[in-house]
Image 1 (cartoon, rainbow, N blue to C red):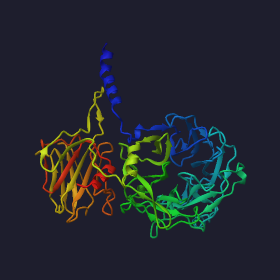
Image 2 (image 1 turned 120 degrees about the vertical axis):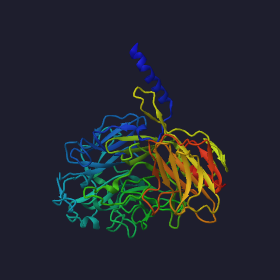
Image 3 (image 1 turned 60 degrees about the horizontal axis):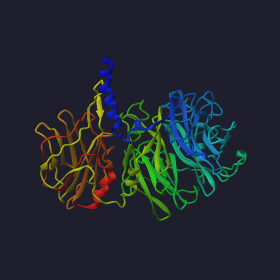
Image 4 (image 1 turned 180 degrees about the vertical axis):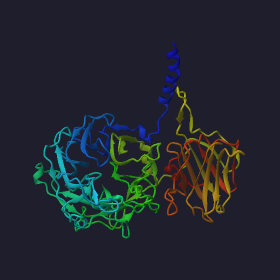
Length: 609
């Protein structure tokens, strides 16, 4: 009887928690894709029998270690369960890495990957990054090869075949004059006008930050979609000439992990990472033979997108619209410590998504990009997630990603994507969870708590992932510092306040009597003679504060690396005084007991006051 009494509260608590809806953006809600320890680049194609075929680079060690090889698995239930792994290459052979898939119309599936065919154990690198001038990580050189499957990924051809790649300037300048090629591969192959295209990223050398120079190319086969004899496949390396897809004029030496999407007029859109604080893009109007001068990515509102040295992929969806994955901050290649060579690779949490729609440009179709939304996050802010793929099934959208030791499949809320795609026309004020609408002092409604003590046996924390949004229309002329716009704080500081600060900016203060967090808008957002719409979104899922002013997400601009800020996970609530003080500069204030989406803030601005 004693055991039963002890278990009863725990069972009740588990039942209550199971009934509470989970935040679909939380990374742990995804379904795990099995691996052998290390896991990278979980990319998926649909096979002729309706399965999801996933290829993954895996192995018992860390990235680049011996035993790294390519494995595929099949799923018939949208990634909930997976078949046993099928090794494309054995784990006891030379390194095989970084694979992408291409499905043909007649059912064959190709897998393309790096292979250290010559079993090279070291290559020349740059000092002082490599003290003896030798690099012993050898998974990003060698030969680019493929195998194929005619049974929907259940088995792969015994023989591997090499894809010839034409020497470019970057190859000839490497320490071996191109006799050994440095390269790797990410992303998605595609078909255009009867030809198959496979991305490749050429590398000039190894040193600080691992790759020291890089650029993108496409390997085009005119007959791979129909020719069944792999020895008869033809290949050409694009673009024409001997220089690949590089950064914009004046940009840095890194232009890599090119991601390609097709537009309705046959143009190819390409986006890629740099170390310049921004991702970059370009278009080809002639099947990849030539490319327009690269530019840094921009929102349709005009602002530059900020992005570190991390994968940033774009996909065309079945509805003809686009989805873009990036990290929304301007990480740069800064050597803070001799052993901190990879700082520019950090801060890949959370994942931000942007919706894209086609528009007419001066030389063909272009993509207009919405304001961003948080797509996936982890509670551990140091965790990195990357190398995604997009799969659509039955009207639902799924993203894969990896944290390098675990890969997952995530269903993405359709309404999140639809909201971004509709941002350019949507206008209106959400009434969902609107708990106060006023233009003067008012009785303060109860706000949600962000966490509580659980009923489990250990009485630990239940993170309720609640949120609060302050939506305010400011009168023209509210620019001087020190103006209190909204304040429910008690004498000891509990509650929240929104005030103007120096630099024509705003500051939100959050306090529960034990913990205080503050964050500011970008400077210069308040201008004379103009009313402003301000949404301050306190999102208790990823614990992030966002400012959206006049329909534009504040991303820090040139002022700071991060425009969004994190608040303390120990902040319990924003409940304070019984009255909310509303400043004279406020024309209208709305308070929500949830985190609005960025798209809703944009629509509220467009609706006007």
